[in-house]
Amino acid sequence: MFKKDLMRGQRILITGGGTGLGKGMAERFLQLGAEVFICGRRKGVCDETAAELMARHGGKVTAYGVDIRDSAGVDAMIGDIFKSGPLTGLVNNAAGNFISRTQDLSPRGFDAIANIVMHGTFYVTHAVGRRWIAGGHKGSVLSIVVSWVFNGGPFVVPSTMSKSAIHGMTMSLATEWGPYGIRLNAIAPGEIPTEGMSKRLNPGEKPGQKSERLNPMGRTGTMEELQNFATFLMAPGCEWLTGQTITMDGGGSLATGGNFYALREWDDAKWTAARDAIKTQNEKDKAQRG
Image 1 (cartoon, rainbow, N blue to C red):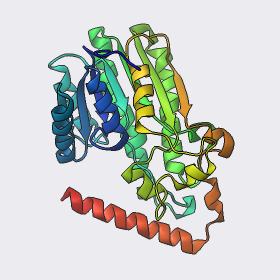
Image 2: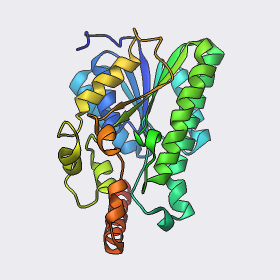
Image 3: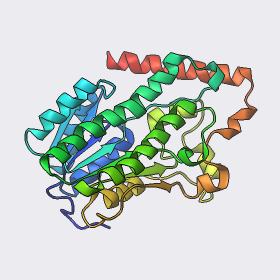
Image 4: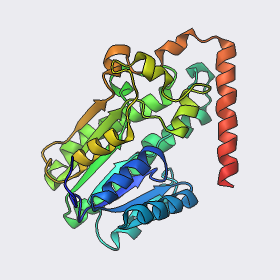
């Protein structure tokens, strides 16, 4: 779909770029000639991804280990990147989510999502954007959100609130930073199965099982579709498109709401089983991080 070297000269940072959707977008930008930077809390994972992508496609991928909840750490990373030249693009992909009845949430559980998704996304966008403005550089920000920003998300309220804040940031900064040649857009993808997402949002189910049954197109999305759409929004040639949040979900949110409303039918036993499954997965992830 896209010509070779379409993104030559582009320098793009992807948060949460070591795995899942972030890794997929990083790979496509690299294939098309961009210099890529990825970051995540697990630097070892990001280092492995950088080595893998460069071995497969050539080019340059630089990995950082940073927790985007740490504003000072974020600013230090962005400062280090800009030493070799300004970024041209930022993809806000890092996130966290899990299903829960809202009455069962603790403040700590709420903060675990809000601090990554809302605060962290702002910290990175702010650190990059103010350097663009100070240096007179144009730039493009792409954020990954959810279709629930339009119609609410029962049982994922911390994520819905935080992603709605990013949707608001996208519209607000598109107008505030437009005069500087900085544009912001967002993609609200439907289900594109990844390991982390599936285990925390659909514990005990085969990835994509619900979408295959309920989606108007009878399937989940593919990584290639997200890669192509992200490339379209980040590549040169579309500079007048800004302030938009675009849903890509096969019509799922139009047909079903695209959220977790169906979980209203769960009884206490199912919620307990889901909570235990998520807790077990979190413990496994901590063990893998060492």
